[in-house]
Image (cartoon, rainbow, N blue to C red):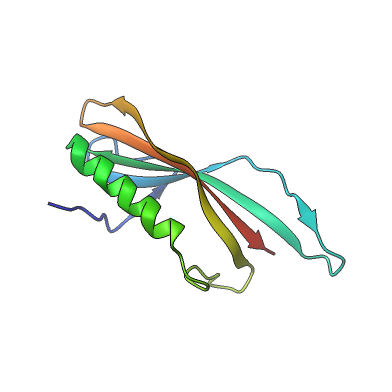
Length: 115
């Protein structure tokens, strides 16, 4: 059985159910350009919480694989405020902890956005 939640949480995962959440992480702005644009690194932690350990592990691995193989234009800004430059997984999936509901898995990612 596979699960794909219809909602991805920002910051917090659902502690009482199967869920996926994104937690933004600190990152340094590393490049500025003469036309005043800049490359903005958006680092984040992806969390997968699932009642079944193997299902949670499979889901985080599938997400890592999908994100690693993004095509140009796969993620776009609704208002045109940024352009995706690059996207990479910086750590492979890792076990975090057993919870009262199930198991929590994580992986870290970094996207570079041109703003």
